[in-house]
Image (cartoon, rainbow, N blue to C red; front, side, top):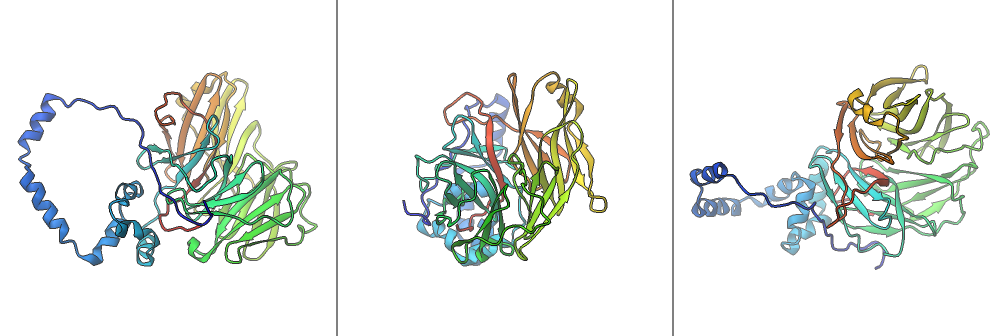
Length: 395
């Protein structure tokens, strides 16, 4: 299917087994006094909902609800392209980010997790060629950037509405070992977005959705130590128009301002005994998430970058009772999100666990197992990114 068009969306709920109601629940239902006449009266009331309130009400419903009624009629489905509906959605406070993930055994299909409802969804992106194996590498403004790992082509997609666009071929081939970052122009994708591809040798390219083309600026300034030795396990973190990348040898951060075109590098020593570490962000603060392993004990720790000293300071760690499960095991960790809410994929030969961590509230929550539709085997998440669900974001 041609790029830039929206296809039909199919959201599959997790399998639920019907449960019998107890005699007490059945008796309560009978004594509630509700009848079909009462329900009919409520339908008559809702039919009189003023037209000017229709879109504001719809915009404030849970995101997943929209897929239940968008197929009712053309008018409801057309809300996706309505300018007024887009304005109402922009007025709604931003909810928790969702996670778009790719599991190890199903690399050519994704799974989305809604932390508010604690549910997994398995979207079928019909506009994406089925033979491709694409990985989510960045996100911004409700859009997710995918990379075709074989042909090195880029796609930008709204996983909720399937608005998809294949980006044009790049004029200069940055090496396959490269990191990707994404920002929006302003507060939403309506003003456009930019994608930065940077390689270890200092070459980089920028895609601008406004001009619909790639540009190849000059190489990095001489004060940036090359090669960068980028940490490919850590996704880029964005704060406003600035992207932050983690590198090693020496340990530190390199950042690029999309608005000014300025590169900056900071050499920051990493904490001792640290493995599988990645950058994160919350309210303009840069954080570090990683496994702290000493002898046979392993714990997940959170550090915050101090603005005065440019050193990492530990601010939180996983509860000890949870860390006991890691004792004596060779644990690997993948951090799938960096916008205030993190999803951590923890795995070893004896364990496969998903956990979310809310940076603001410092709350650790276990995530339900990711199961493919009609499947029973737990899937371990290999790749993913956090994105803010937005019904009106167009690629």
